[in-house]
Image (cartoon, rainbow, N blue to C red; front, side):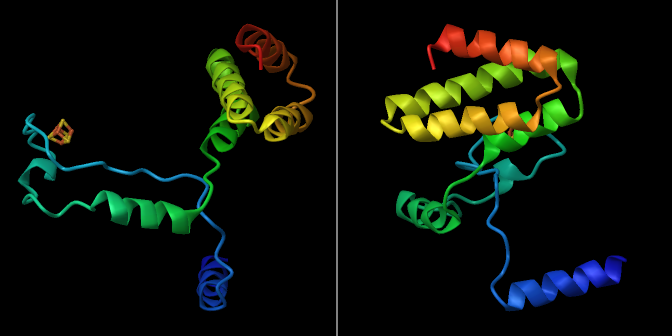
Length: 137
Ligand code: SF4
């Protein structure tokens, strides 16, 4: 199965059908004064970091990320009940941010998408309802 998946991934890549990333980790810089033994960040010579213009270019190419939806989805789908409140708050905060940015439809779509995806997760639904009420989202 693995060789098949690998082959499919290579062909997709060659055809330009690679899905966009939903999230990424971006290290702003390597400068650090902690000097942890297991880390090489602080050994990197100055100047190896991207300029703000390069960062802008990279993020323009990546396009919109989908970090929140993926994190919330993972928490709720895997029933990490102890984190439902945090997931709900994160989602409500993002919806509120979208509204503040004048993207009310996107905010509603984000909340509706998650609500519809997990209709039977009543504890999460309750947390989300409370978080949305608190945020005013
Ligand atoms: S792990 Fe690396 S980057 Fe993180 S605090 Fe330690 S030296 Fe700094």
